[in-house]
Length: 148
Image (cartoon, rainbow, N blue to C red; front, side, top):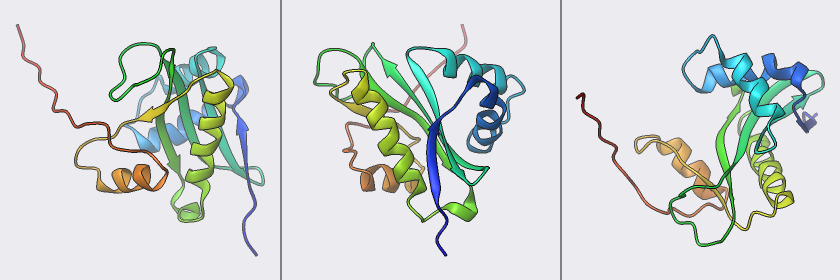
């Protein structure tokens, strides 16, 4: 039998769930739960959670970007996929694609004409996922810094 997965907007009380999943995607951060709570409560960002029954199996973090976005052609804000993660046991079943679709819907509700994302240059899995999700590559950059 196929697992039934539901996508829901996270509530403030679920910030710890979002933080647990986000810490699997990005470096562990002891302040992540508070960060997720702020994202959930902001009008310009949100966290979407994927549930199989009562088990959280994935998340997407989405936001509005009002500043420069590579490849932007529209006026107004751009919806931005900040991150998406699915537990390994639930991968390859369309959960991440559904999270992205829910994030796109979130952006459309906020009158965005475009939706963007990014990943590191060496992350071939993420590049394939983005291209497979309908994104087009808008550019590649290398960032620099030096101490003063």
